[in-house]
Length: 273
Image 1 (cartoon, helix red, strand yellow):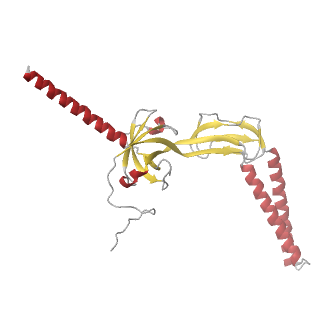
Image 2 (cartoon, rainbow, N blue to C red; image 1 turned 90 degrees about the vertical axis):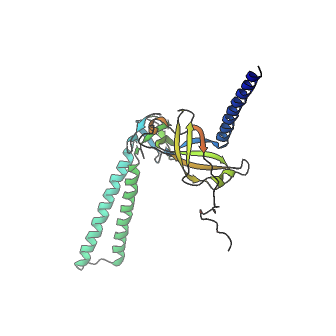
Image 3 (tube, rainbow, N blue to C red; image 1 turned 30 degrees about the horizontal axis):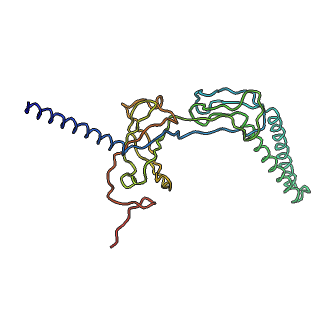
């Protein structure tokens, strides 16, 4: 009975040691973990640059598009007519200047003031035509990059004013990981460090690399924002399909005590001679 009691006591001690070791390891992992989220490198809200009526809106929320795809089109009948008139004025001003130059070369009675006025009229007509050409280029709203429509704020046949929101677009191909870490960790981290990111929505863990440290400490929470990028190898999961902007999770860092301090400009602090 004494032998059995000693055996069970030893077994219980071993089990407690394993549990305690696991708990300590988990505590260390939690200690090195920080909340994280995914941010898209390209996320913009397109606004109307014309006060005009929309005659076509081709995409809805969730639609995928390619760069330079047509998203919407304005009714620019008046603008096109104005451009045609401006082009005619520019042509007329050019002919007037050419005629004055030819007449002056032939000894005609063309004053310097008339020459200057002709040149000024041509310059004004050219500038006006350029402005109207640019405004006509805004009649079609095209995608600035490959991505998805997050929100559509307009409908066909709706009149918009300058600055009115049209679409919110996002490109999920380029994602950054933003983590909020205690400022005390700064002494243990360096740019280029590898860390792990577990995304709640996918349940997967991805390797990442630390790219930037935002050099401002929140005075209340004593935290710092750090930004990294998820590594994509040949054998990695297709992150372009699984990961999207706004997903959140946990970033786990391997903290190793740094051997030298860095100044704000990234240079090493030199010791006194």
